[in-house]
Image 1 (cartoon, helix red, strand yellow):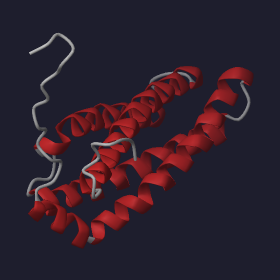
Image 2 (tube, helix red, strand yellow):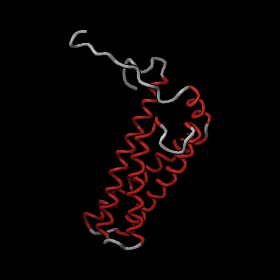
Image 3 (cartoon, helix red, strand yellow):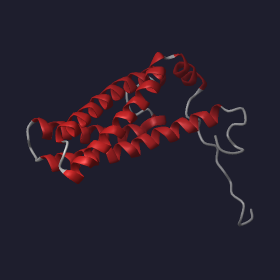
Image 4 (cartoon, helix red, strand yellow):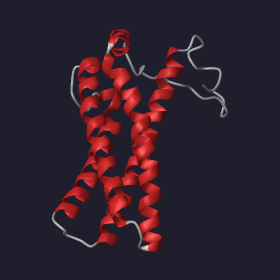
Length: 168
């Protein structure tokens, strides 16, 4: 073998044929496809409101309501996502194909829930609450990127060329 050559080991596909069929037949796939952009839209608006509050001190109520709305959207996508994972992979969470995404989702969920607890019990002032929201949002962005990459992987695997020639 020459120095410049590489041996690639075949990667296990994201879905078996049976899992892909269950994914494609599940209405939970459609639910996830609808909830994800809605949650991202809420996140975008909320991020602007949180940053505005931190920059100006104005709009605490609007920022708080927006973070609560984002958290409720997260709960909805987490619950329906767990149901989707059960239908497709036979387990509610931590299916091997989505293990790291689910692990990161737990951190995202914990930080969003921490925000709710801190607000509900006034455990910190408004600025600290918003910094917790930003920490939750940072982990959410990482987690969303993980899922986008998985979606891309799934599309490449199902393309006629097997995704070996380029990018989707």
